Length: 193
Image (tube, rainbow, N blue to C red; front, top):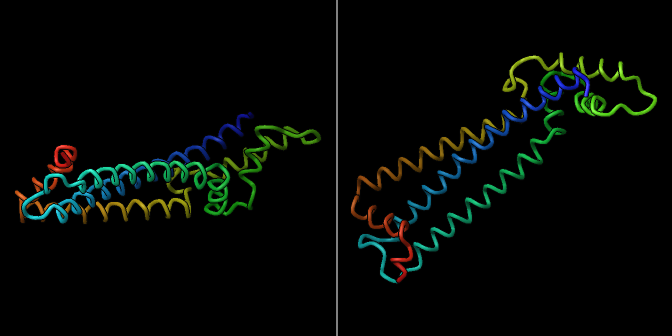
């Protein structure tokens, strides 16, 4: 790969890495909100006397939360591989900088492999011009994908804050009930037996 191609690939990679970090932060926030939701459900389902001995609900809540976390992890993995792949990110970079459609991805592809009949100097020039147009920090170049991922992060913070507020209220309003309900989630087999 040419030096300009490496610079261009580095810029695209930096934006992809920035978006992936933000997507994983959003996933962690939403995952924590989901776990908090399971704790709220446990408080509601356990009742004031705690879990009935032999109840399978704590185990079902734990397994449901685990399944949700696994599904969420695979969903984020899919998102990063598909929506934050080189092609979609290159299109967003073009949109955010006003470059012609296909210029960034085309320059990347040419910098990796110059087809017969095409001048390597021309491919190098295309990569250099594209890299020059992508000056600036990765967050500023992320365009509409950056806005979308930022929205996921903001909503994740709001969801987590809401769940934590509800959990705090439940713990303060009925601390013994909260301890019994949440204790059953930490040892669901003991409740089931």
